[in-house]
Amino acid sequence: MAEHAETVDTSRAPERPREHERETTHRPWWQIVLIGAGTLALGIGLLYFIRLVARPLALALLGIVIASALSPVVDWLGRRMPRGVALALVYLLLVVIIVAAGWFIIPPLVNELLAVIGNIPDYLETVQEWIEARPWLNNGVVLDTLSSQAVGLGTQAISLPITLTSAFFDLVLILFVSVYWQIESDKLNAFFLSLFPPRQRSETSRVLRQIGHAMGGYIRAVMLSVLFIGGLAYIGLSIIGVPYTLALSVLVGVGQFVPLIGPTVATIPVALVALLSPPTKALITLGFMLVLQQLESNVVTPNIMHSQTKISPLLVLLALFVGGVVGGLIGVLVAVPLAAAGRVLIVEMLAPAIRRRTGAAGHPVEQDESA
Image (cartoon, rainbow, N blue to C red; front, side, top):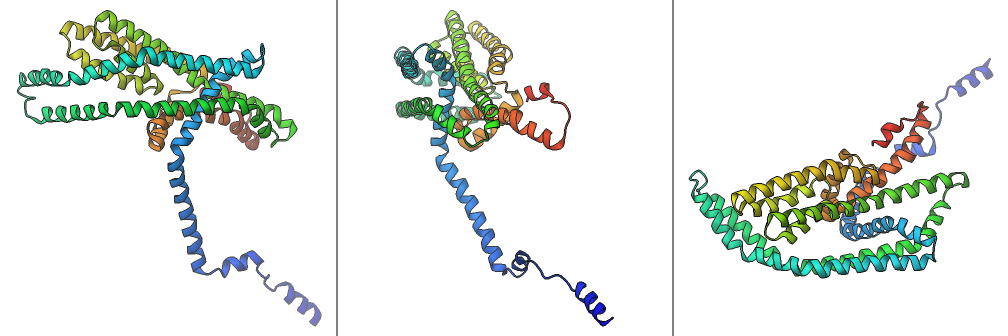
């Protein structure tokens, strides 16, 4: 009986805490504070590092996006000639197009911009006369605001050559990144696929191709929109007889690089120039720009963009907001390609994995395609 009681007492004795439980229980408070402070410092340092390298990373990403856009052309030519020759021909043609566009567009564009700057005093005088004829506006605040804005525009115009030079070197860097990405893409894909089991490599390769098509499709869609809308703007404004047609048309075309927001912002200078024209010409110009903007926003961009990237307007807005907050203008430029790549990853990999995990029945293709 005594042995039985002793056995029972031993079985009821509390278990000794495990090793990690003893460490957690007896960990000094200063260690917990130190770990928390180190984690916070690491997070702040990581955010600061991302902010420092955001611009180079964005430029590199633009190069990858351009490489993805040109990849179908390179692959098509590569089936008919050596890939190195096809790559050289495609990028040589791209450089010729850029140089030709700069040769024919930049000099008259700069001349028109300088003419606009030179006419700013006349524009201010016209606006001042218009305001003075309306006593409810003639309180001095409006004129002071316009004068300060004119000074700001003049300062930005003086720095225009520096801005163009910086943009040129950025473009050269982007093109070099694009070329090297094309050269190394096969090796990079092979290395990435080697990280997956053989049974998953075919599906992973298909997803990678879709990501490249979605990212490159954004550039293809934007370039088509730029050429189409910019060309229509030049033809229409030339027929109407609006001054500074080339500069305004280039501005309208460049606005296509920022979906949804850019075209609206690019229309403002055209409207301001039109308001300084005779009333009939001003009304015709405003009507033409309204029709052009509706054509762009409701017909051209949705069809081209959706056919190339399948990005919904909501996703575009969210991407533009996040990209603008993180990286400014260049963040806006890379936001939509990143969103397109993220959409492919979610639809093709994350969503099916969640369905398998949760045992969800069916595969809502329609919802995925509209994501």
